[in-house]
Image 1 (cartoon, helix red, strand yellow):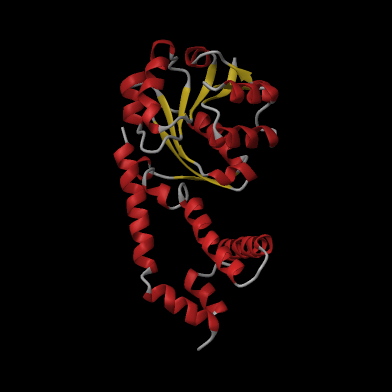
Image 2 (cartoon, helix red, strand yellow; image 1 turned 30 degrees about the vertical axis):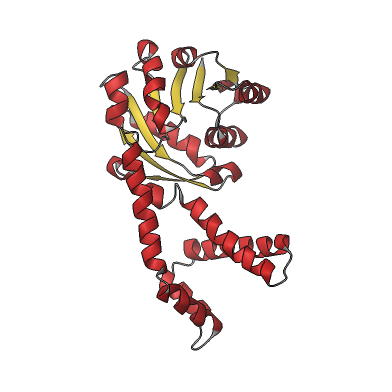
Amino acid sequence: MSVFSALGAGNMANAILSGAVASGYLEPSAVGTYNIHEEKRSAMAAKGYTVYPSIEDLCRNSKYILLSMKPQQAEEVLGKMAPVFSPDSVVISIAAGISQSFIKSILGEGTKVVLAMPNTPLLVGCGATAVARCEPTTQEEFAFVKGVFSSAGLVEEIPENKMNEIIAVSGSTPAYLYLIAMYFCQYAQEQGFDPDLANRMFCQTMTGAAKMMAETGKTHQELMDMVTSPKGTTLMGLNVLKEGGLEDLVRRCCDATIRRAYELGR
């Protein structure tokens, strides 16, 4: 019997399981997995996890079941779970757009559900995960699920009806930051800097800026003011970003992200 099992063994599931095991929150023997790919099953077995031969076997033998497949696969996976699903189990979905009502329409109205939206920095213990408890999940069960995610980063509870919107705040945002980083580092290379040096400097700058936002208590504008002097270099750069429509681009990016989550939604 596994305490916590993952249906799917991709990067996100691996990050969640690795964080919980590395922190001591879960023992490897308490973790179960299922994946259709042999190489991923072998990798999970090498970590000491129980590898189940089928979705049905995992479902029969797990208290907490993490749905970490693509949203488009949710209906098929839930359909296989339904005949053997126990009402004592808790389903944790990290699939974008998948609602508790959709899960319950297949597994039953009494199904315990926790919705979660993590991000890939879980892989390095610095993730950010938004979670929502759905009835009849108990507070004790919800606390256990939050503990799994908090072992690899920050966890915040949000309303269920904001799970799609949070994707634009933290779920997809690492990719947007990587894109910006790529552009700055490419520019640095054009100026003759070693690409590894440029990446190290930019990464440290992002890390430091994040700590300033998280720890100083200052607003975003106050932090910008600390870097900016009248008629100075930073002001010139900020003016170009503002005049170039950066705010509108960010809003359109967020709108597109959320719109797609609703399109994928069930």
